[in-house]
Amino acid sequence: MSETMLEESQNRLQLDSQLSELSRVPPWVEDLGVRHGLAAETRYAINLCLEETLANVILHGYKGQPGHPIVIQASCSGDSLFLAVEDKAPPFIPSDPGQRTGVAGSLGNMPLGGNGIHLIYRFAASVDYQPLPDGNRLILGFPTIAAKKIAV
Amino acid sequence: MTLSTESIDGDITRVMLDGRLDIQGAAAIDLKMNVLAGSARNLLLDLTNVSFLGSMGLRSIVLPAQTVKRRGGKLALLNPTPMVEEVLKASNIGEIIPIYHDLDAAVAALR
Image (cartoon, rainbow over all chains, first blue to last red; front, top):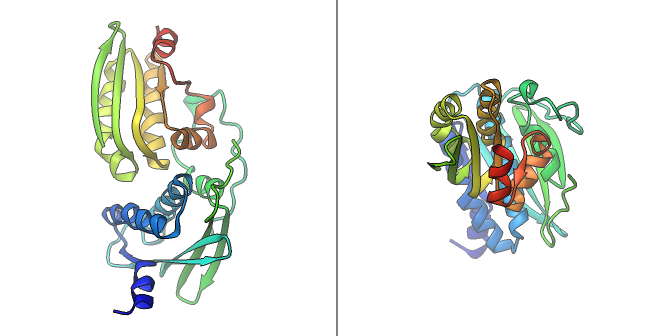
């Protein structure tokens, strides 16, 4: 395998649509982080955004059914690392939910769900959705130089 | 993800979590957490050794907190790492469930 082919294979991860496959993501992100010199905060943000994205695809896109592909492809451009997550599930546009409000002071009424997409938009530097003829592509961007400042 | 407990001052159960509180980590502790929330008066979740927290992990914190509150008790979080605390604050959970970085202060608040 040539060096270019090796790098291409290292930048790509294909998963099956089952939650147990998510355990393959952190070591892949760790390797990606080492090769691209990513800050610990950026690696955390990537792990978080991928877990939320992949869980959405598996549980909602594929309705929890195994046997469907999900492909993550990493690429660098300028000072950013982009991760394209492609699936063949029905169209699903993860819109920016905006700032979470109305939760403070109400533990009893706090919803148990709904944090996943919110976290993706908070921890990724950019989120871009592209519909595919037979699926979806979500492109998550992260800084390669310094950790994104997360305002809380 | 592993979970161990110790009793502090009788009314406080300190729950020490260790590992990734991701989908699989949450599944590993959910039953034990629910049992603790249904039996302990006050819970102190020690997050010192939690290296990752995702949205499913947040559920594993919020649900027991709601259960403990319904029973008249309290739940507090101890010593999350900076990135875990970012997730808590980004979800607004940090505004509702108190976070402490000092064990004595956490115990005093739960008494």
